[in-house]
Image (cartoon, rainbow, N blue to C red; front, side, top):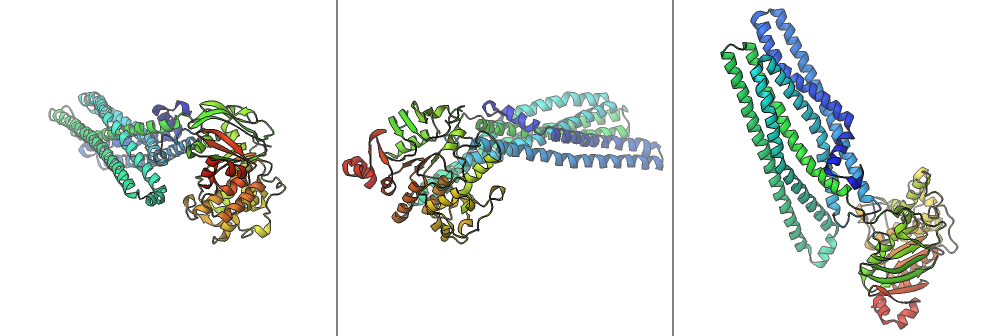
Length: 616
């Protein structure tokens, strides 16, 4: 399923065709179940006419045996048909969740500006489940239609007028069901939209609860959520009311239809046109038809809700990327020269900047929005409106984003940690490199894919005397202990994660809670910094990596980062004097443009705007 051509119809079709064999098998079994159900009243009529009326005990036993076999067959068909259909539902929903997750994780982006994380989670769970239910509805609907056909044919055999009545009335009921489904579909879509928004808002508020309490904004946030929750409740009630009207009207009409079939059959029996057994069969078939017609009503409602959910999933899968795909690869070997030429993007106003290969450059922005826009351009979350950003003379807009991020890593200020051990979080880039190495491809041999590379001269020592809880970590890919990889040990030492591990009960193998909330803000920053350093990319951009650590620790980290990144291009977007003091030069961005540059000590002494941004 191509995301750029995704629509509700293709999502539904993909969910069904992807499980075609299970849906087909379930449909066959459902047909067998419904056909068996239709034959039961016919067999009862035969028993009355042939065994009870004119036959003997042997005939009675024989036809009761046939009836018992019919019951055994139809119950077996129902059991295994339902099981197969549920499997199709689960697997289709799972595949949709995987497709949504891939789109969310797509390196081209394009979703975060229009969808809250909680909204995407709701689409990947509730909506995917509803679309998966279409498989069960389709198989059941085919069985219901087969029941209608078998029942109609049986009625036609018993009495032509009764059969014709069903053949004329059933299509009219199906048309009415489709007509009644339209408001249900609209309200189901609105219900899911409001529920997803409320879920996304709740997740967003919970994530920022500490900040909200600190600002005294918790009551306002609670009021906002209550409004969203009330809107979601109202939409759910409207959808439930639409479903109730839909089911109620169809049930009433189908009941009247079945009653009409029974009345016509009774009249034919009183006139002697049919036997007593045929009358019993006709009444039984009329009652049986209520089941398939109810199934058709249920199936229609499921398809209406499935179409609404499929439209929401299609909106995610078909969302345009934040940046178009490039086709070029970085120049090899990657030297790490960064050039910004007359860049306009957001608050950036004609930035011209050159970072030489291997340089450690500090960037100070008087406006945080300028720093954010610069980072978005460097990470290629967006392309400049005008001008170009180049890596070794190759414009970033021409590069494959995945290839770019292999050699140029932008570590944001708000970095998330993941569930797992502390060491798992630090060693994540090494695991990714090992995974690429096990799958030969364009990544193989890249300068960034070097977890076993020897440390640079001057790198901080990370020997056994610096490693807390030796051997405590679990083995990584191919049974390799991440602590045996020099890049991991060096990153742990440079980011001062050693001290963090000493304060934890199980050292490096201490399991972290969701988003690393079991750690303090400074500890999370150090772990995130170590993860970025462990990647060993030729170009590394760090955004305010030490805002939550104390001055002494910050000085150690500044020394460690400078030593570890020696010879590789590093940009420090920060206002920290400790980090800026160790840079080769510092660039001041003011008003969205480069105002001046020089050594940190010279700028503090000579440039008031720089002094206010760094020391103010």
